Length: 369
Ligand SMILES: *Cc1c(COP(=O)(O)O)cnc(C)c1O
Image (cartoon, rainbow, N blue to C red; front, side, top):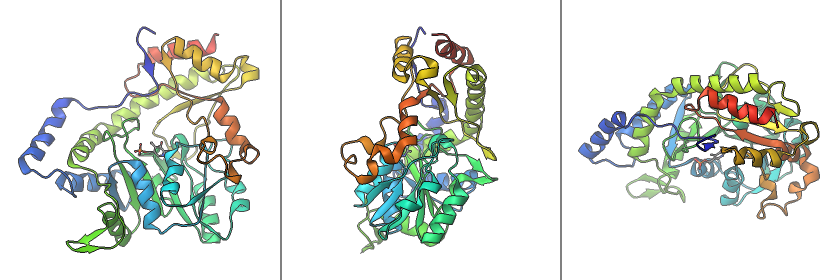
């Protein structure tokens, strides 16, 4: 490749489209604290995502941290090691002990069938991740959570706009968290959200993201400052107009990758999720070192030398980072499926403006070594 191709490239609208919103902010001098654009984005997103209540945040990590605080989660929480590190860090910030459970090999999501052995008297919640935007086994997870009286909080950072079993994926669980970071399918540069199911919970979350203020002189909890500002909200409103066209472009790229790579020896792809409207957020491939006769890392380096910068999402596992590696549940024997996926994965470049010719070129580097 003549120019470097990175794993992602943030989507931005034309600058001209954004200017009138900036003008509005400059005119009315409201920069943050639940301003008009913030309110408008909350309304539009609730409709677009088909969810009852949404609270916007400065970023997804603070949304995760606040979601746990909002539900008074304490003690131990069952979670996945195969994710971005923020999932587990949000537990740490709430003084909660993460308990890692292995993932299932089909999509790499938390395996409900391995979960029950990890539940103790201290367990208060389950925090799964819909990895790469593919839905977790939501019905089974709900069954287990209900049976043991646990809260279910989804890190839905990858699955903006995904529909599963005919409804918006963020309707599952007690709360779901989205990220609007620059690298995600829908971005507000930085940003995030919590989806909740009733007015009282939303109101409580809105207090928590504003220091705990429930009125001019009333503080109801040790809240933090994690409010989305008006610039972020403005960008979100413009981005939303282009969402469908961006997803259509991502779909064409995913189809091209799939067609080119489906018969590549030693390269494995995830199946397409059933009963799901995907957002094509990522395109992970898995390199079987024996069959491919080259290691994942060797292929990763070879692609880099050819100006193709994939990313090994998610390697290393969160359980391998020093602050978590001494936990009993971090033992590699407990996480064999996660270990294998982490050692085989490369996420290939995927963003709306990636042209199909480049996708074919990337595939030819992978097919013929
Ligand atoms: C991106 C991401 C986050 C963090 O979101 P930020 O908005 O970057 O704080 C959390 N969890 C997962 C799985 C993510 O991919």
